[in-house]
Length: 146
Image 1 (tube, helix red, strand yellow):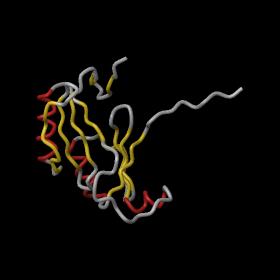
Image 2: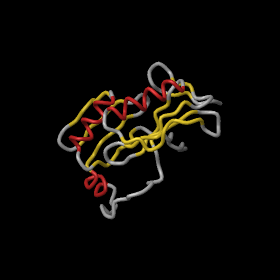
Image 3: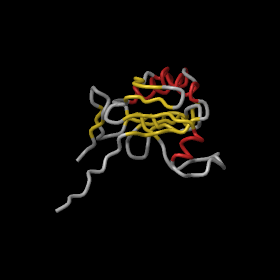
């Protein structure tokens, strides 16, 4: 008798063009770096981890073409959930001061939340959001409704 494996998201790996630059950026944001070398860096983020890996090496590892690199929306975003609108504003000001590019200023959302967007040095988009019903716990993990 076999059982299905438990699905889980454990690590998000971002392909980056300059590992040292990206490590400096994510360090400046305050993510806790647990390991790094000349090829990869790993950060604790709460219930999962963030990894930075050379764009070309990551494409090769996943058996995907390196070129062409996407210039527009890649079909995914990362999220930084906050407990309040003020926390969203503070977080956006902070990341911009560390070199992030503001993509969309914080605003009220159609679902009753409050969010804005920034991108990291390689253009990976992040949403900073306070969303109704999503609780941000003291350890940084989120609790979803239901």
